Image (tube, rainbow, N blue to C red; front, side, top):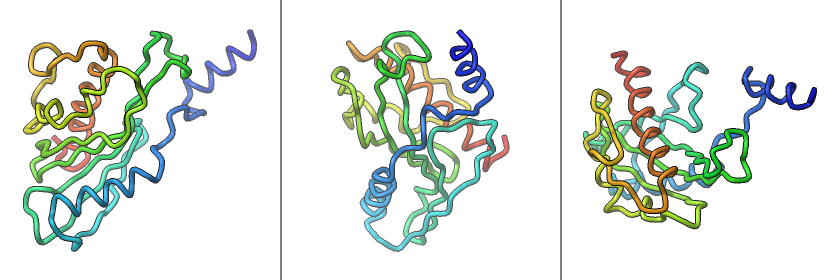
Length: 179
């Protein structure tokens, strides 16, 4: 019982990071995707500092390139979905690593899934399903079943991923736009 309370205390106080920042493979995927989007290798990435209060499971970047007026920011991160319904049950948690590209006005330009760990709901990785997030801005709401398509067998993944895209877009706006 004491061990349980201690673990609960560590989790509540932020003393333990169960969902660590995504592995370095994401950094390579981000660079490759930027080169593909810009059709050039002439760009630089500047990390954007994120205050601890936002508790993001990833990184934001500013993309500096003379070649593009459309891509300005990127977020790369991990979404953990919990199939069991038990918040502390990491054994039942699937994840996906992904990248969001943003315009200078914080509108989503592209979402790309880099790695997906679940056996169900792989449709969330398809370009066709991910297109529905293009144009999303901080002031818009994303609701599964309304303006985001549900995926049979992937309810937890779709809901968590949709919420995460909306949250990360809002946070970017707060960090850079201040609105």
